[in-house]
Amino acid sequence: MQKPGKKLSFLIAGAAASALVLSGCSGAGSTGGGDAADNTITVLMVGNPQMEDIQKLTADNFTKTSGVTVKFTILPENELRDKVTQDVANQGGQYDAVTVGAYEVPIWAKNGWLHELSTQAGADSAYDTADLIKPMVQSLTGDDGKMYAAPFYGESSFLMYNKEMFEAKGLTMPEKPTWAQVADFAAKLDDKNKGVAGICLRGLPGWGEMFAPLTTVVNTYGGTWFEKDWTPKVNAPEFKEAANFYVDLVKKHGESGAPQAGFTECLNTFGQGKAAMWYDATSAAGTLEDPNSSKVAGKVGYAYAPVNKTEYSGWLWTWAFAMPKTTKKQDNAWKFISWATSKDYEKLVGEKLGWSRLPSGKRTSTYSIPEYKESAKAFADITLGSIENANPTNPGLQPRPALGVQFVGVPEFADLGTKVSQELSASLAGSKTVDQALNDGQKLAEEVAKNYK
Image (cartoon, rainbow, N blue to C red; front, side, top):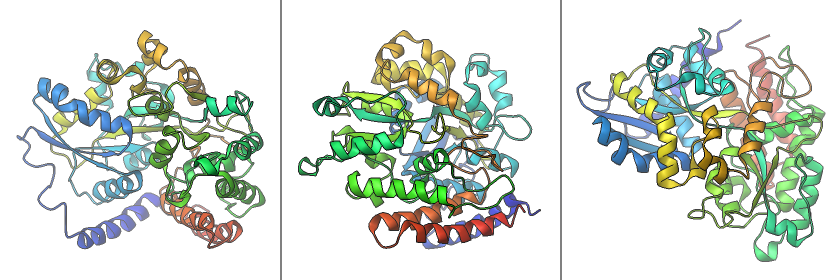
């Protein structure tokens, strides 16, 4: 069987080289993070609210006490994935710490692209690795049993809804809704005259954008990307039914500009009161409950991820800090990573920015903090329940060939998922049918399957 990690490394290296030529070598002059004696580290992060918070807090807190200056680069999710993959896989050495997810870490650890962090974490009693939530640690563990990234926050997915809009229509959201119920609610709450969508769902292409929520819909409808023996099922009836449902729901009752709407756009849409419901990451709740950034703070209800044929359907994800093998500043990089993922950092966020904004979902102790429990009482229990009930081994109705709820844990999936999402985003825009998009996707999946048959 072909080793997919080596294949991906070759493909990415070529893509990265091309990207550097096209970008005019914008990263030139930054190899290995600079002189090892320099107390400055470079950190690449995804542009989510939790990362924007740590950027605000670092200079006056971490740098002030450690003497380590941090230069941040923050990018939208799709751009972040491209940039970090190019740099880490191509051994570019531009960054000392990067945010990566549960999909990348086991693959990259196997390829030898990351420093293991278990040794440093275990040697630091104050870090308290035993406090980290087990599913999060497991998702960041290599074949050797060592942790190759430290979770910054963990999440599953759930349904968020505007309680005022539901009350105005006399509607009641069940704790565990079905997708049929959600579609019915969306039709009743859609108010285009007021610029309010019935629901917001990601339509932005990307395996980690559109297909994060959509793959959970596929799972609960009885579909799968691949069967246990790697038989591709992208154009199977169950996959088509789920994708048609998703696309039709967005086209009829979703947000305007859906093909360009990802996590950030839906966060803004729902947070500004322009959507009645939003199915997405549990980590969004902290921002929605902050009155400084949300018009719906205190008005949001939370329900488990909608289902069809399964009992639960929430995904499992963590954004985590990893240390590329190319860094020459391991000690300072670990100082930052351990601070960013510590109990003390959570306390700092609570005291400085508000307790609902804690980067939660990674530490058991978080859910015992009185101030957090009070500020997050609307969503804390259902967040933890969603995380605990996510099943990366068997998230649907049939056995899977690789781990992952909203992704398939093999290197080729990033390219496969992104290409199929581009086809489906075109369906949202009306340029092709969903069935046509998935028939094309089946051919791509058959090529992936050849590596494992």
